Length: 229
Image (cartoon, rainbow, N blue to C red; front, side, top):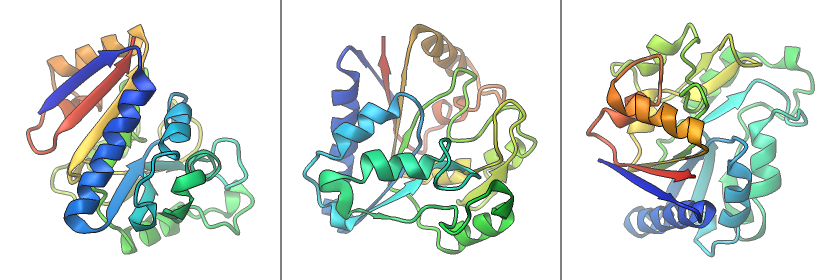
């Protein structure tokens, strides 16, 4: 089921949707796991979400994807989550960055070991918050990544894998499609006319050229779509 929400109050609507789903999951399970992905538009969402009075001490926050860079690197998703989301009320949430904090240089990071540890302690996210790139990628599932076929395979167990997209900097780790679709709900947000055109193209057909299409052409997991005009 795909529900598309358009409007000018993008951040408020997106944050309310995430908060509502966290509350619902806490009410059912007593705990919740939220997977987040960082892009330019996620900063105000993180800043507003951290103000929500939820049972954050029963929430685990994980990354839908991460660049294989140290925590002190400007491109670190974990750093953004720590600096922007895990403040105020949300400071009580549990969070462990994928890249070990003792890695200060990119060449110190062993991606295979990171993936192995992530999958060893893997917990299925209940809610997944995703953005979408102008090329139709979600998390770090890029169309030009040699590992994309494995990432999109329905036969793979839910979890993380490593990817090396050619058009994006840094090696990545990302949840695979099985993990994304294993959530109770996926909340997808993006802004701008061009991204809406990319989304509309993905809605027309299932194609690995636009990985977001794999969220739109399935009946397993509800997907709420929020876009800012």
